[in-house]
Image 1 (cartoon, rainbow, N blue to C red):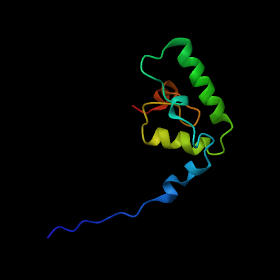
Image 2 (cartoon, rainbow, N blue to C red):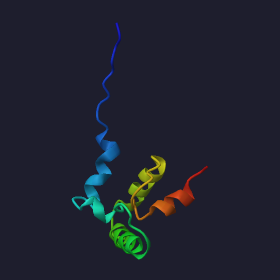
Image 3 (tube, one colour):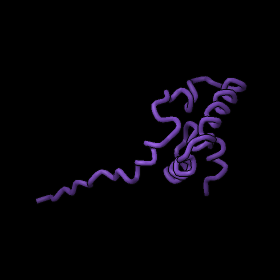
Length: 89
């Protein structure tokens, strides 16, 4: 007989998202559409990081993105290239 353990949801792990300044905003603010480059990408990232700069959970969001190795989007005011430069190889 195989026992399957069901883990209870860890709401405390995710609850910081309830306070996020971006809550309810479309993902297009934080993730680049296919083919986005140059000034368009730079403008979107600046707009996204401006939202993050006012966010009460910015540090938790950035820590989450770094610890879970999020590859795409702006998280906690960190762009994809910001996070890449902080990763331990």
